[in-house]
Length: 337
Image (cartoon, rainbow, N blue to C red; front, side):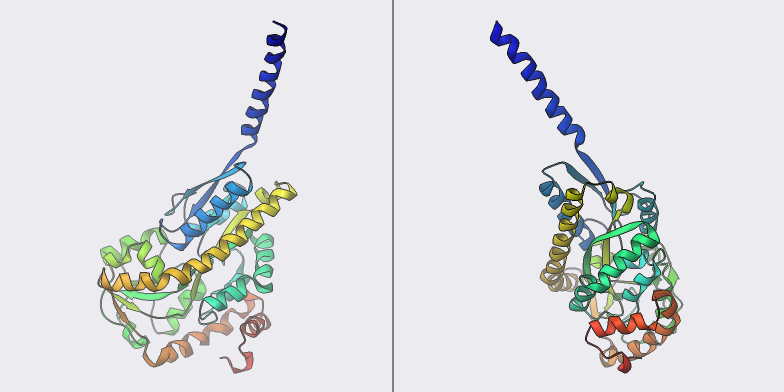
């Protein structure tokens, strides 16, 4: 009997510890603008898996793809106010909150994956992270790399800016991207991402632009026939965390979260390089999309679109900031438009 009496408090104590361990566990919500299958989802699931392993289950993450938690810009607001933990969103949708990030979306600044990696994972990327904390109350933890934005449409092959005549394109609600189309003589329609597929399906707009991976994930091949292999903007999606959430963590937990963000970023870059060519081939062979190369190595597109750079010097932090970015990319600022 004596032994039995001693075992009772031990059992109670063990149960209490177990319950308290579960009570400490947290489940974070992560918003994703894109559907499952794209680079946003790949980054999100990778980060979620890493966090669960690194924290030994103390933090788990539920993903809400396809805009279930609101528009991408809504998620920035909600994260800033501490109403949402995490979001993965197109870089152009954080620019309105932290304008200096716009240097990454100036047309033809980033010309491929290596350029994107140099900027996001170097001093420029760290500076932009600090700017988003200051300006928007969110912290960039990592990056998804989706690839060059390709113009698609349902009407005809497009090789030159003149071929855009009479076509209506959907663009994000982003001043730089709107201005790029206007430089080509086109007047685009700024529509929310959630409205894009339906607008294409119903003929409200004739085309849009996104990387091959996004075209595939969003099934745009069902409503688009033609792809112009353009690269006027390289699409990247920052993974952001509410700064108030981040600051509530212990120093050890902060370190684990930052590590997971960096590792997920590395995975995203490798994932793009490993999958893009196959996705492009599938869009052609399985879904019948026709790919057109821009005329004259895209030179006319480049000359017209880069003419808008001076219009955005003030918002990105001055011409000196653009010159710094170009120098990091190994390009002589004096030789640029």
